[in-house]
Length: 180
Image 1 (cartoon, rainbow, N blue to C red):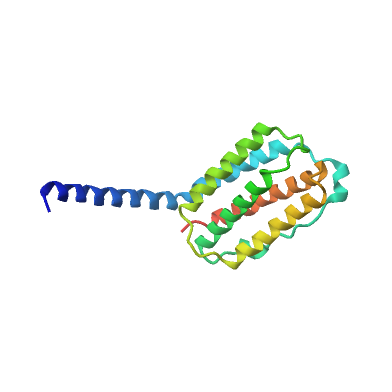
Image 2 (cartoon, rainbow, N blue to C red):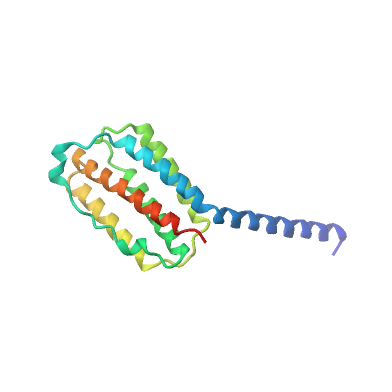
């Protein structure tokens, strides 16, 4: 092996070690980023929904958030739950918003923020998924079924809007449990 080849190999090794260190730092600070996103996302959701209309009270329903999800045993479980919540919210807000009358720019800012935070979380996620993720999927399926059943009406979106505000409270609880 020539001296040039050895130097190049050492530089590559050094670069890999530095980038691995930077990536682990990012994961260590992820709960701070998530907490900031929770606040920003909550503000955007509040702005996009407007005031709750009283005639929508008759459509009020309980989607039954799986409370067990809020009691993770490990920080990685909290991170997986937050990731799943954000992915599901992205799916819900990516379709059939035409009847809401919501400001499209605010919705797009919210979706862009969700996509960025989902990507950040994915870099730090463990590969194994838990059963609590399945319970979250069922919870969000109930929300999607409700919207579909109500034909994505304005009142259905108002009910879901209120539920999404609660989701951000759940996400904030989980974010606090993401710390190592």
